[in-house]
Figure 1: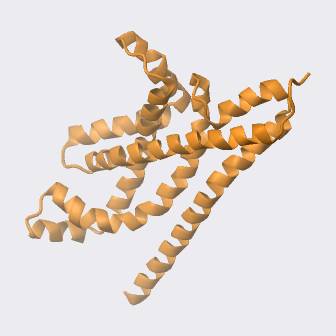
Figure 2: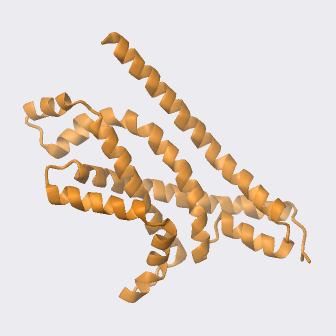
Figure 3: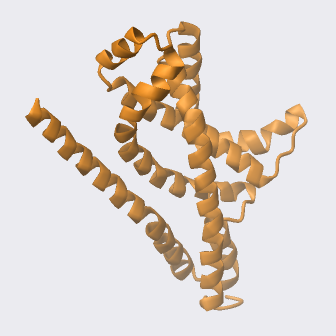
Length: 224
């Protein structure tokens, strides 16, 4: 027996809770992007130990479920005297997890730049970091954009697991509303539409960037 019907108030609660989903996604994107640049730089460095550390980091976060990583950050840190709130645990987990994937995306884009660019920078006596920042990274940026935007879709959808540690984002709000309305088709159907509204524009943007990159690539090939 339902305690109340699903109406405009409940719909409004879902829309408002979507802002926390968006905020967590942006935190994961920003934190993971910054750390991903560091990981990618370590993966292509001349130091073998640094490359191995970065590779190990990527393998760990890509090979374990993000839910387990989230539980480790929220519950497991109690063994070392920490007790993060759900927001802190989710922000850290999603940033660290995203960094592993961004690191691979960025590394692939950087390695796609011809070796001649590295050699030209070396001829100008540029060191590794200045070469990355001034020569390689600006050229690799175009290659990074399509997969980076595409991965944003995955981030938005994956934030729903944060509801399992008590973070009141879109998925948890839907569960709470469903317990009093008992109208799962309406509640979760609405949530699916909200996620679609958030992810579909990103998917279109990623596809547009990929097509634009293909056109530019064919243009360069024709000129060559």
